[in-house]
Length: 73
Image 1 (cartoon, rainbow, N blue to C red):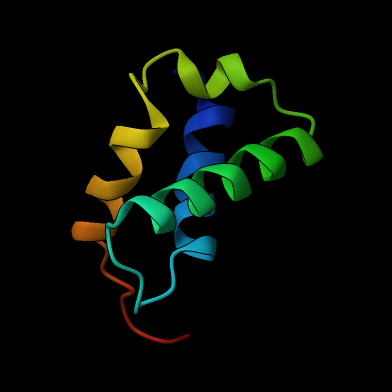
Image 2: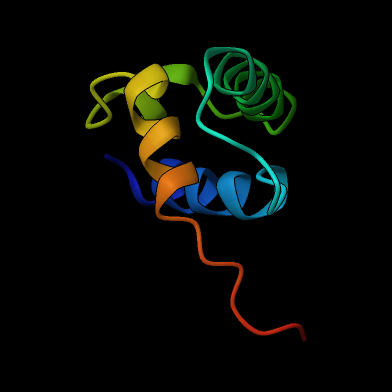
């Protein structure tokens, strides 16, 4: 995956996964659509994300389950 795609995906998860989100089908679908729209809005081609991410529909539930918001800044 290209660095720009990886960085955007990391930021996209950090900015779009509320602490109360669950890994249910509806939440995953909504987050996937948000991330795809954000990718397009930032001029990043979807293939930059898709190069190493097998499926956003599989990656997002994993990100939700393992999400750690960290310390507030």
